Image (cartoon, rainbow, N blue to C red; front, side):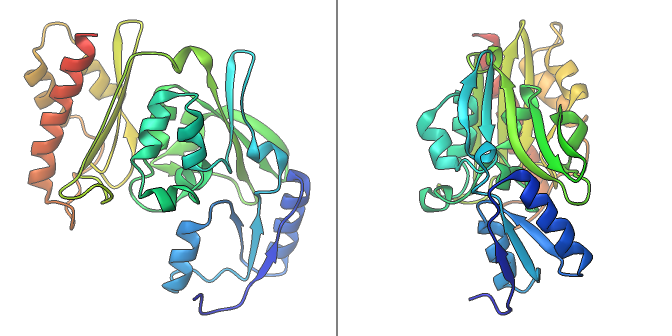
Amino acid sequence: MIPFDFDYYRPASATEAVELYMKLHSHGKKPMYYSGGTEIITMARRNSIQPQAVVDIKSIPECGILEFDKDRLVIGSCITLSALSAANPFPLLSAASQGVADQTSRNKITLGGNICGKIHYREAVLPLLLADSRMVIGGPEGKREVSIHEVFAERIRLKPGEFLMQIITDRKYVSLPYYHVKKRLIGNVAYPLVTLAALKKDGLIRTAYSGVCAFPFRSSAIEQVLNDPLLRPEEKANRAIQKLPAPILSNAEGSAAYRQFVLKQTIEEAVNSLEGG
Protein backbone atom coordinates (compact mmCIF):
# COMPACT_ATOMS: atom_id res chain seq x y z
CA MET A 1 0.00 0.00 0.00
CA ILE A 2 1.23 3.48 -0.89
CA PRO A 3 0.80 5.70 2.19
CA PHE A 4 -0.20 8.92 0.36
CA ASP A 5 -2.57 10.15 -2.33
CA PHE A 6 -1.55 11.28 -5.80
CA ASP A 7 -3.18 12.26 -9.07
CA TYR A 8 -2.89 9.86 -12.01
CA TYR A 9 -2.81 10.85 -15.69
CA ARG A 10 -2.47 8.70 -18.82
CA PRO A 11 -1.85 10.96 -21.84
CA ALA A 12 -2.22 9.65 -25.38
CA SER A 13 0.65 11.60 -26.95
CA ALA A 14 4.10 12.89 -26.11
CA THR A 15 2.89 16.48 -26.47
CA GLU A 16 0.05 15.89 -24.02
CA ALA A 17 2.40 14.18 -21.57
CA VAL A 18 4.84 17.08 -21.55
CA GLU A 19 2.08 19.68 -21.27
CA LEU A 20 0.59 17.80 -18.32
CA TYR A 21 3.97 17.45 -16.63
CA MET A 22 4.82 21.13 -17.01
CA LYS A 23 1.37 22.25 -15.81
CA LEU A 24 1.55 19.97 -12.77
CA HIS A 25 5.09 21.13 -12.05
CA SER A 26 4.04 24.77 -12.20
CA HIS A 27 1.33 23.98 -9.62
CA GLY A 28 3.90 22.45 -7.25
CA LYS A 29 2.66 18.88 -7.73
CA LYS A 30 6.11 17.22 -8.04
CA PRO A 31 5.04 15.07 -11.01
CA MET A 32 6.84 11.91 -12.13
CA TYR A 33 6.78 10.09 -15.45
CA TYR A 34 5.77 6.46 -15.11
CA SER A 35 6.35 3.52 -17.47
CA GLY A 36 6.75 0.13 -15.75
CA GLY A 37 6.55 1.64 -12.30
CA THR A 38 8.05 -1.20 -10.25
CA GLU A 39 10.79 0.95 -8.77
CA ILE A 40 8.49 3.95 -8.25
CA ILE A 41 5.93 1.78 -6.44
CA THR A 42 8.60 0.20 -4.23
CA MET A 43 10.08 3.58 -3.31
CA ALA A 44 6.63 5.07 -2.68
CA ARG A 45 5.69 2.20 -0.36
CA ARG A 46 8.86 2.89 1.60
CA ASN A 47 7.95 6.59 1.65
CA SER A 48 11.26 7.38 -0.11
CA ILE A 49 9.41 9.46 -2.70
CA GLN A 50 6.10 11.30 -2.49
CA PRO A 51 4.98 12.43 -5.95
CA GLN A 52 1.69 14.28 -5.93
CA ALA A 53 1.05 13.41 -9.58
CA VAL A 54 2.07 10.59 -11.92
CA VAL A 55 2.09 10.87 -15.71
CA ASP A 56 1.83 7.37 -17.20
CA ILE A 57 3.45 7.28 -20.67
CA LYS A 58 2.42 3.73 -21.64
CA SER A 59 -0.39 4.90 -23.95
CA ILE A 60 1.94 7.00 -26.11
CA PRO A 61 2.25 5.04 -29.40
CA GLU A 62 5.95 5.82 -29.96
CA CYS A 63 6.77 4.36 -26.54
CA GLY A 64 5.29 0.97 -27.46
CA ILE A 65 7.19 0.30 -30.69
CA LEU A 66 9.43 -2.74 -31.19
CA GLU A 67 10.50 -3.05 -34.82
CA PHE A 68 13.24 -2.73 -37.38
CA ASP A 69 12.93 0.43 -39.44
CA LYS A 70 15.27 -0.13 -42.38
CA ASP A 71 18.72 -0.46 -40.77
CA ARG A 72 17.69 0.63 -37.28
CA LEU A 73 16.17 -1.30 -34.41
CA VAL A 74 13.60 0.91 -32.67
CA ILE A 75 12.50 -0.02 -29.14
CA GLY A 76 9.93 2.02 -27.28
CA SER A 77 10.78 2.88 -23.69
CA CYS A 78 7.61 1.14 -22.44
CA ILE A 79 8.46 -2.27 -23.91
CA THR A 80 8.75 -4.70 -21.01
CA LEU A 81 11.90 -6.72 -20.50
CA SER A 82 9.87 -9.92 -20.94
CA ALA A 83 8.48 -8.76 -24.29
CA LEU A 84 11.93 -7.68 -25.40
CA SER A 85 13.48 -11.05 -24.52
CA ALA A 86 10.64 -12.94 -26.23
CA ALA A 87 11.04 -10.96 -29.45
CA ASN A 88 14.84 -11.22 -29.24
CA PRO A 89 15.79 -8.60 -31.86
CA PHE A 90 19.18 -7.99 -30.20
CA PRO A 91 20.49 -11.16 -28.47
CA LEU A 92 22.91 -9.38 -26.13
CA LEU A 93 20.14 -7.03 -24.99
CA SER A 94 17.84 -10.02 -24.48
CA ALA A 95 20.49 -11.74 -22.36
CA ALA A 96 20.98 -8.63 -20.23
CA SER A 97 17.21 -8.19 -19.85
CA GLN A 98 16.69 -11.81 -18.78
CA GLY A 99 19.17 -11.27 -15.96
CA VAL A 100 17.12 -8.51 -14.36
CA ALA A 101 15.01 -9.55 -11.34
CA ASP A 102 12.58 -12.48 -11.80
CA GLN A 103 10.09 -13.32 -14.55
CA THR A 104 7.12 -11.77 -12.76
CA SER A 105 8.99 -8.51 -12.29
CA ARG A 106 10.26 -8.51 -15.88
CA ASN A 107 6.64 -8.66 -17.03
CA LYS A 108 6.30 -5.14 -15.55
CA ILE A 109 9.78 -3.63 -15.74
CA THR A 110 10.25 -1.66 -18.97
CA LEU A 111 13.44 -0.99 -20.86
CA GLY A 112 13.05 2.73 -20.23
CA GLY A 113 12.27 2.19 -16.58
CA ASN A 114 15.40 0.09 -16.09
CA ILE A 115 17.61 2.63 -17.86
CA CYS A 116 16.14 5.59 -15.95
CA GLY A 117 15.99 3.90 -12.55
CA LYS A 118 17.87 4.97 -9.45
CA ILE A 119 19.20 1.63 -8.20
CA HIS A 120 22.89 0.87 -8.86
CA TYR A 121 22.52 -1.86 -11.45
CA ARG A 122 20.35 -0.88 -14.48
CA GLU A 123 21.81 -3.79 -16.42
CA ALA A 124 19.73 -3.35 -19.59
CA VAL A 125 21.73 -0.23 -20.43
CA LEU A 126 24.99 -2.16 -20.90
CA PRO A 127 24.36 -3.47 -24.46
CA LEU A 128 23.12 -0.02 -25.50
CA LEU A 129 26.35 1.59 -24.34
CA LEU A 130 28.32 -0.98 -26.32
CA ALA A 131 26.21 -0.47 -29.44
CA ASP A 132 26.44 3.34 -29.34
CA SER A 133 22.64 3.47 -29.33
CA ARG A 134 20.69 6.67 -29.74
CA MET A 135 17.98 7.95 -27.41
CA VAL A 136 14.79 9.65 -28.54
CA ILE A 137 13.73 12.08 -25.84
CA GLY A 138 10.51 14.04 -25.55
CA GLY A 139 10.34 17.33 -23.69
CA PRO A 140 9.20 20.95 -23.59
CA GLU A 141 11.37 21.77 -26.61
CA GLY A 142 9.95 18.93 -28.67
CA LYS A 143 11.52 15.61 -29.62
CA ARG A 144 15.29 15.15 -29.93
CA GLU A 145 17.54 12.23 -30.83
CA VAL A 146 20.97 12.05 -29.22
CA SER A 147 23.75 9.55 -28.61
CA ILE A 148 23.35 7.52 -25.43
CA HIS A 149 26.81 8.77 -24.44
CA GLU A 150 25.49 12.35 -24.34
CA VAL A 151 22.70 11.62 -21.86
CA PHE A 152 23.91 8.61 -19.88
CA ALA A 153 26.90 9.17 -17.63
CA GLU A 154 26.53 7.05 -14.47
CA ARG A 155 22.77 7.72 -14.80
CA ILE A 156 20.34 9.16 -17.30
CA ARG A 157 20.62 12.95 -17.42
CA LEU A 158 17.48 14.56 -18.78
CA LYS A 159 16.34 18.16 -18.67
CA PRO A 160 13.30 19.13 -16.56
CA GLY A 161 10.11 17.84 -18.15
CA GLU A 162 11.89 15.39 -20.48
CA PHE A 163 11.28 11.65 -20.71
CA LEU A 164 12.78 8.77 -22.67
CA MET A 165 10.59 7.73 -25.62
CA GLN A 166 12.66 5.31 -27.70
CA ILE A 167 16.04 3.62 -28.02
CA ILE A 168 17.49 3.23 -31.53
CA THR A 169 20.30 0.83 -32.39
CA ASP A 170 22.01 0.32 -35.73
CA ARG A 171 21.19 -3.12 -37.12
CA LYS A 172 24.89 -3.93 -37.63
CA TYR A 173 25.35 -4.29 -33.86
CA VAL A 174 22.61 -6.82 -33.16
CA SER A 175 24.35 -9.79 -34.80
CA LEU A 176 27.90 -9.17 -33.59
CA PRO A 177 29.70 -11.80 -31.47
CA TYR A 178 28.85 -11.17 -27.83
CA TYR A 179 29.46 -12.35 -24.30
CA HIS A 180 27.25 -11.86 -21.27
CA VAL A 181 27.45 -13.13 -17.73
CA LYS A 182 25.86 -12.17 -14.42
CA LYS A 183 27.54 -13.51 -11.30
CA ARG A 184 25.71 -13.50 -7.98
CA LEU A 185 26.72 -14.51 -4.50
CA ILE A 186 23.81 -16.95 -4.30
CA GLY A 187 20.60 -17.78 -6.15
CA ASN A 188 19.28 -16.79 -9.57
CA VAL A 189 17.46 -13.51 -8.89
CA ALA A 190 19.76 -11.61 -6.53
CA TYR A 191 21.53 -8.39 -7.43
CA PRO A 192 24.86 -8.98 -9.16
CA LEU A 193 28.35 -9.10 -7.80
CA VAL A 194 29.41 -8.51 -11.40
CA THR A 195 27.51 -8.28 -14.66
CA LEU A 196 29.66 -8.06 -17.77
CA ALA A 197 28.38 -7.49 -21.30
CA ALA A 198 30.71 -7.49 -24.29
CA LEU A 199 30.61 -7.11 -28.06
CA LYS A 200 33.33 -7.71 -30.62
CA LYS A 201 33.32 -5.21 -33.49
CA ASP A 202 35.98 -4.90 -36.18
CA GLY A 203 38.18 -7.28 -34.21
CA LEU A 204 38.03 -5.18 -31.05
CA ILE A 205 36.35 -6.05 -27.74
CA ARG A 206 33.95 -3.60 -26.09
CA THR A 207 32.86 -4.20 -22.50
CA ALA A 208 30.38 -2.70 -20.06
CA TYR A 209 29.78 -3.49 -16.39
CA SER A 210 27.15 -3.41 -13.68
CA GLY A 211 27.44 -4.30 -9.99
CA VAL A 212 31.12 -3.39 -9.90
CA CYS A 213 30.81 0.31 -9.03
CA ALA A 214 27.85 2.38 -7.85
CA PHE A 215 26.71 2.83 -11.46
CA PRO A 216 26.80 0.92 -14.77
CA PHE A 217 29.58 1.97 -17.11
CA ARG A 218 31.60 1.43 -20.26
CA SER A 219 35.25 2.52 -20.15
CA SER A 220 37.46 3.38 -23.11
CA ALA A 221 40.50 3.05 -20.83
CA ILE A 222 39.56 -0.54 -19.98
CA GLU A 223 38.88 -1.37 -23.62
CA GLN A 224 42.29 -0.05 -24.61
CA VAL A 225 43.87 -2.51 -22.18
CA LEU A 226 41.68 -5.43 -23.28
CA ASN A 227 42.62 -4.90 -26.92
CA ASP A 228 46.37 -4.71 -26.33
CA PRO A 229 47.75 -7.62 -28.42
CA LEU A 230 50.91 -7.82 -26.33
CA LEU A 231 49.10 -8.76 -23.11
CA ARG A 232 47.86 -12.17 -21.98
CA PRO A 233 44.22 -12.40 -20.76
CA GLU A 234 45.34 -12.52 -17.11
CA GLU A 235 47.46 -9.39 -17.53
CA LYS A 236 44.60 -7.66 -19.31
CA ALA A 237 42.26 -8.41 -16.41
CA ASN A 238 44.76 -7.16 -13.82
CA ARG A 239 45.38 -3.92 -15.69
CA ALA A 240 41.69 -3.40 -16.49
CA ILE A 241 40.83 -3.40 -12.79
CA GLN A 242 43.30 -0.55 -12.28
CA LYS A 243 41.26 1.51 -14.78
CA LEU A 244 37.90 1.32 -13.00
CA PRO A 245 36.10 4.70 -12.97
CA ALA A 246 35.13 4.54 -9.26
CA PRO A 247 35.69 2.47 -6.10
CA ILE A 248 34.44 -1.10 -6.14
CA LEU A 249 31.14 -1.62 -4.34
CA SER A 250 31.06 -3.31 -0.97
CA ASN A 251 27.56 -4.31 0.17
CA ALA A 252 25.35 -7.24 1.15
CA GLU A 253 26.03 -8.97 -2.17
CA GLY A 254 29.77 -9.05 -1.52
CA SER A 255 32.79 -7.20 -0.20
CA ALA A 256 34.96 -5.04 -2.46
CA ALA A 257 37.79 -7.58 -2.22
CA TYR A 258 35.56 -10.47 -3.24
CA ARG A 259 34.01 -8.43 -6.05
CA GLN A 260 37.47 -7.62 -7.39
CA PHE A 261 38.34 -11.33 -7.38
CA VAL A 262 35.13 -12.18 -9.27
CA LEU A 263 35.62 -9.27 -11.67
CA LYS A 264 39.15 -10.35 -12.59
CA GLN A 265 37.97 -13.88 -13.26
CA THR A 266 35.02 -12.63 -15.30
CA ILE A 267 37.14 -10.34 -17.49
CA GLU A 268 39.55 -13.18 -18.23
CA GLU A 269 36.65 -15.42 -19.23
CA ALA A 270 35.18 -12.76 -21.52
CA VAL A 271 38.50 -12.06 -23.21
CA ASN A 272 39.21 -15.76 -23.75
CA SER A 273 35.72 -16.28 -25.17
CA LEU A 274 35.80 -13.36 -27.61
CA GLU A 275 39.44 -13.65 -28.63
CA GLY A 276 38.69 -17.20 -29.66
CA GLY A 277 35.61 -16.12 -31.62
